[in-house]
Length: 310
Ligand SMILES: Cc1cc2nc3c(=O)[nH]c(=O)nc-3n(C[C@H](O)[C@H](O)[C@H](O)COP(=O)(O)O)c2cc1C
Image (cartoon, rainbow, N blue to C red):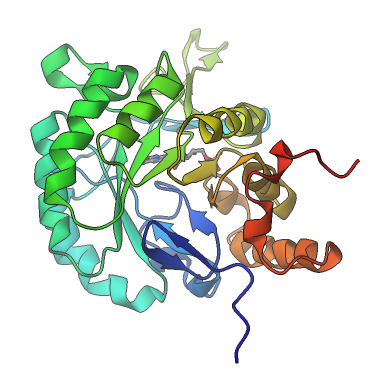
């Protein structure tokens, strides 16, 4: 009998060869990277955020390098759901790994509409809800800030989407744990965390904010300890699986999230530096299992909570 691949996982029904995922917004639609790497190294790819209508995004500059990370203010540039269905959907079958759609809306109705459309799209294996978006009917306050609003949003989307539903959390929430619990009670299957942290850079020569949008989202290794802490705390608060992300660049970084309690991990910013990173991290995870004589990576999920090996 063939041995079970040691990195395989089942995330709320989503079968993956590896717990490693490409984070939304950092991997385009996947096929842009296919000339550099066999995409089957990824357990799943999360597509860039999709909105109901096309978006041209924020004015430039949209990216700024920062110590151990970067700031981005892309502004969800995307072709809208119709453009996605026409231009992107037909090519998703070529990728060779499961694809997750990331959706963003300005109202609960928009999220629901997007999820209902994606329910009929066989090439998409799961939906991730980005709740770090301004709620137009509440004066632009992010959906993700208030547990009650997150509960309402997830409860509205849940009945119209039958596949695994992932809710992506941001530390911009006042009370991250309350938001995670609200999403779980309203029917989320998986939580992913963390999204970028809001920051800004000032151009001292111009004496002006550097980014066209003034503020942007900080990502990369600079946010990793904050993200590991968030996963650690969330793992103790909910019983649904977690996808951990924020600054993962090596297998050791990925292991930190798994040991803190994440079932899967996602890599965002590091893809811009190393397009072959998925192959390297998978090899590093296998090596760790070999060195520690472990049969399957699942033995490591949340293992930092037990007495340890010191
Ligand atoms: C350029 C860029 C675009 C992003 N776009 C999205 C997006 O459309 N939807 C989303 O939920 N997160 C988006 N993110 C957040 C990432 O998916 C991820 O949560 C964050 O960058 C932390 O991971 P990292 O440090 O490995 O990049 C984006 C991040 C970057 C850097």
